[in-house]
Length: 209
Image 1 (cartoon, rainbow, N blue to C red):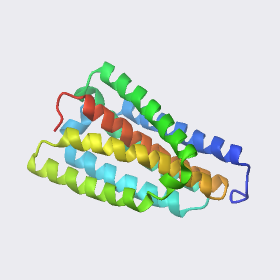
Image 2: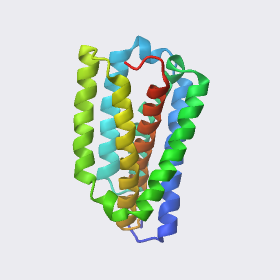
Image 3: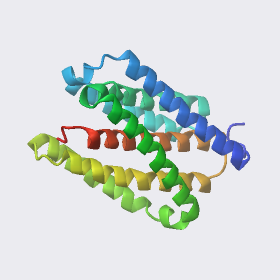
Image 4: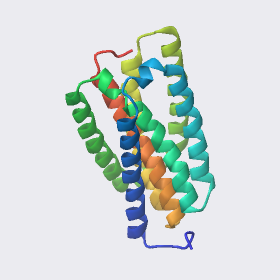
């Protein structure tokens, strides 16, 4: 049933609902978790974020049953809420609002660019994957040795995830329009958008490390 072909408009509607669901779940977790949890439990929070997110991504991508995928996606969105909970300690409310505004503007612009130049962004898949690997290694080295490039890495990361939004949107329009594919595509776009928001928050903070 959920692997049956649906209309492209319904596919995009479900994909949009998944993104909104991710925003709601992460927001609820952010409100429920004490804002100082990240600063006082950095190692625990990092491990939880990594383990739960990887498990959730695996379930979301490997399962073809939307309900199971949604459970897996919840395990992805919730850890982002854990990270969001500490944002208020790093930046002001004004910076958060500005980051949200920029995230929406860039997400819409990237999606529009993807619709105009689908072939260009679809061809960037391998390059973007390699860029993320290099970025992650750079972030680990920066944090481990205190190199002081956190802000510049956030700028680079925001550029990469802007491209990822366009790429993942174009890819979502290329797959079979099923509810299952809509859930997995929506989950991927949520991750792109959430990371973009965190990058803008980092760029707006006084501490770029």
